Length: 553
Image 1 (tube, helix red, strand yellow):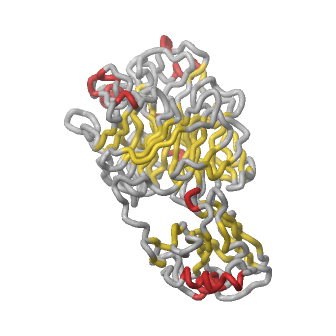
Image 2 (image 1 turned 90 degrees about the vertical axis):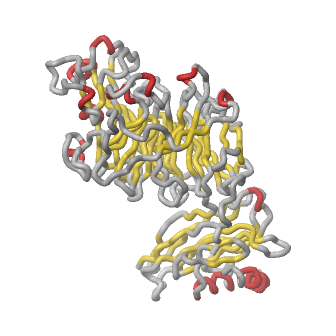
Image 3 (image 1 turned 45 degrees about the vertical axis):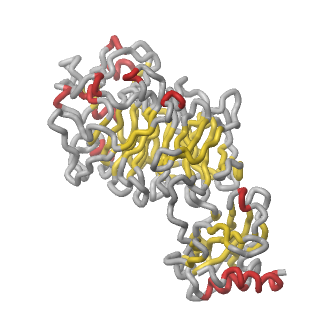
């Protein structure tokens, strides 16, 4: 059967010479997939641009809100384990599942003196960073200068940020940790070591702001954490203080507990904060610009607006007495030497670079939760949470895509939606040429490609410049292995590499290396990608990302 198809494969791929994805067009939706996990459902869903469900990951617990899909198809997901504080966003554990749903890692951070909640961030080195409550007694809170009148419950829970290295199916080593309790100031109790003038120390957080009692002890209610690998910084968000913060990740854990050390020389102190100058006595309520905000993150390199902060400002209409939310993009005043205060004692900028509200502002409102994300084509993906409404706007504020979640009972609320412009995943990233083995490929081309032919091809000479054809870029180079994969499609080396995409636009293939193989390819990375082809004309209708497999001895 392979031999019969080979001439057609050659004809279809002779011209596959860099899927230069067509230049982004204003007014068009980004073509990839969207992933989300409703509050009332243990399952995580992947939909295509047409809103069709194309893949799911099962779960054992309701979401602890945060989730992240790795480039290898593994899902990291915060899980709401039993017995946690009765507070929105409670987690307790993090699970990692393969693309087929197999549980790979089942980690707990759920007491008695700590509890993971809300967000997580998967770092380039594979470590996992997450937010946790640091559960203190009232006596410990008073020792930190907390006004006893503000302690009506039995615990006080300032936030911490923990980084772990996965060591086994249920285990991890803590490799870095930061505790807010080490960076507090107060002007209530002069007998305490952290007594001082709050306005003189914007690098510290006032343990008595905002003034008032918290029956559940949830002091900060941080709801987002994001690691910025370019600057080795961490950005996190505080719902209670209505501001977000930057801290230095280059510190050791010991330095992170103090006020010196690290690339910025300030240890674990706050390097930058924005949203509510009243929190550090540099303004009044009239100067507040963030209200119960969520999902703060730094736009990655290579994306429009790279380096800017994007967030969902939940109660943006508060100053005018209206219930509406806004998307906020902020241009951070980056400086190698640190962040300076403006003459008025606040951190700049004075106003956001971009604010998006619905044409009728009250049409977009989520009192709590919600997310935003900048997409590769410059669009912005928005999740309003409360009604499960997700939509995408272009750079001219035009809505170009929307979807309403229908999964979940009794509520369809969605904490976060994430975008992935990936169509090909692999079950592993290495193969031994001496021992042999197999890496499986999952093709998820999107429902619009159902019934199209597909061809998985490979390259031993990298992915750039790739092969350009018909406005597409196939991220593989034309070399001997590429020609071999075309002419030996669905053979012993690449079984299933040529076929027909099913009714959801999905397919499957594999790379098989028999034991005892030797040759110059050992030690190299082999890349694979696929092209979807019109079954009649053989015109290319989609090309995928490339996945790498390291060939080890």
